[in-house]
Length: 271
Image 1 (spheres, helix red, strand yellow):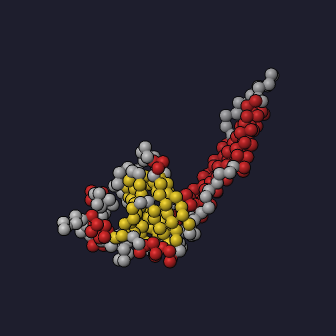
Image 2 (cartoon, helix red, strand yellow):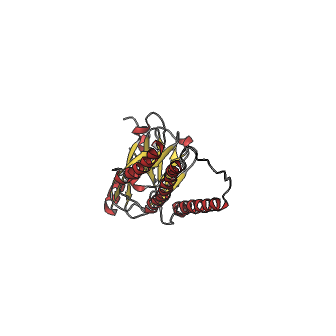
Image 3 (cartoon, rainbow, N blue to C red):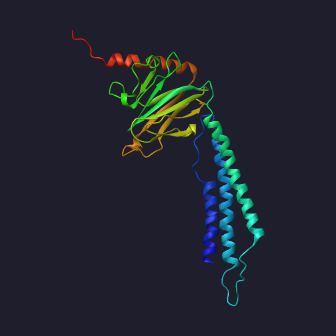
């Protein structure tokens, strides 16, 4: 009977912990409410199955407990029960997979009007690059990374000369406009994660990964690295500021282009 009580308390405690827990998602700030809906569907399906399975275990322990004089009947097959369990399992798995597949299709289908924004990670800081007046990002290569060119841009690519370079860990984005976030790491595995945006993606050395989003409200949101990238991992923080159009343009005009940064890094002639 003690085992039955423990199983029942496990079910009741788990349900109460969820219902009364003070921890929940931060208020969403992007178009990815579909991700929240998918997580909620998955949670309810797995939660119901958890309650059903553990409750059934408690019932079986109680119903078939040892009693003097009782003897178990050996019935190795029950085709009806097997088919029922297989059917319910198939429906449950499909119910969990289908919403995720729909969201994933939306996640990898970038709108044509999305503006590219590059995020570059290295131990333990964030840097960013925005397209210039031509609307294009220039080529880059990790082999071109130097103290004067920390993002490794190709100096011979004219498309990159007007790219806007942001160092210091604070990126601004305009509200209501889709952006395609291009992710690059120059050293180890990182992960760009803003909890309010929901969307996240690993940053793998030697690859350019991506995701897209549309910021839906203004505000300041913290960037976290969601991969264990070294001893300074917990300090790898940054900020995304979502502005209205006027404030965004004011901020953008204050940033420096790749050409301007190269000019600052060149040796000055002696007087």
